[in-house]
Image 1 (cartoon, rainbow, N blue to C red):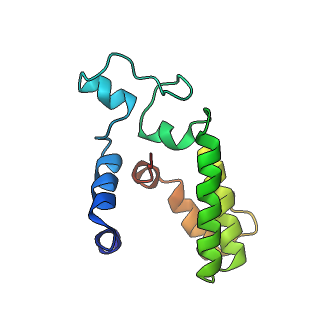
Image 2: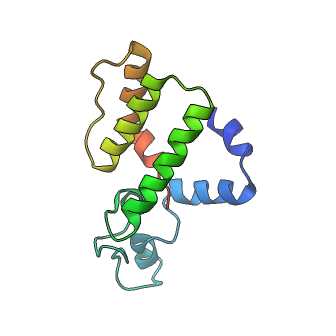
Length: 131
């Protein structure tokens, strides 16, 4: 259950997840809607900035940050003894998600295929938004 895991996070993270997942945070499109600024462009690349764009931005520094965090996730999964096939599948499909591509399920076990199918559901992608 998501709420059980969310409660284990520090209050600041709980607050951030709520704001980001509900699209009520300080990104360009929201700030324009709230009339705090006139333009919605991403400061890194100039594209319209919404919560989804924040994760997918290829502007200066964004790709480096994504790569750093993917390495952190990879190390955590290794320390948690996550099956290597699951690690590879998750990491590869997170990269595909960032590029706007559908998940690849070839060679994945049925349970992994089910997880990947759920990742392509719009409700999953709308809740997976990080600044």
